[in-house]
Image (cartoon, rainbow, N blue to C red; front, side):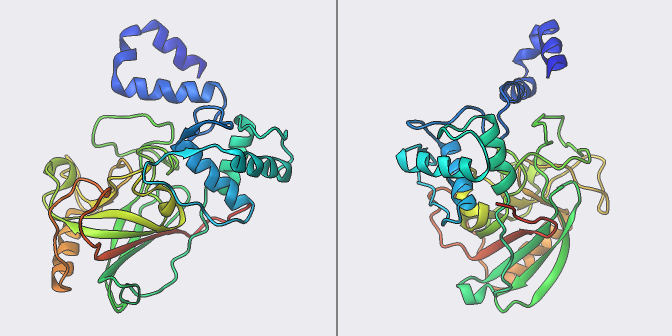
Length: 314
């Protein structure tokens, strides 16, 4: 961080570049010791989406049901949450003051960022949907994974390569397309972080408006979280997560795909085949809504993303 500050001070014009402003904000958060997704000390009386995330982490640690995120995407740090925080601090041998500073925030992330969600194996049809996509991920998202498309009766239609890595773990933005490094990726609770784990309602939408970034084919849109971190985050804290492709210069099928802003990247042929197979199942391609908030249609599918290499420790 010190070297980064010196670089900015010696090159003041660079401060106004969007990528550098993003990195500077991250460095500011790091300078006060708060781990992402937190960027400020939290205490009673505060409101915000970070309070929602904190509440979820604390309740997980205490073995309580996950709270429901309000439509506003903002929660209040009330007296009940303060009491829960003091219980959390006692459990984790922290200073007990009901205030979430760097040490309490780091303990919350370390213990409770993983949701423990595992795909149940239930068919999409048994849950009232026409199809399901299941992808198991590693904690380090630099590894591409195999996803599978299932019909309503849980018959596997085909498997495909997918990349669920968001921006780099330091939050930096590089020239598009960013083919990345071997880092774990930005935490999924941060804007443009890794694809969120959990069970999510999903729907087929018409193509996005920029083929260069999203490909020319129909996309699958994550609409509303049902279980795991997805239930906490989608669509009121994060939104706009898709299964899509892109027209990546110099890339060909078989090569590693670039990082996304939290979406699931697939090969162009995969994106087309998913749309074609869904059409055979009677799935309708809805007009592209641009997001999952106030989604006007009944979602027709499910997205299930779970970890295979992690153990939840609370």
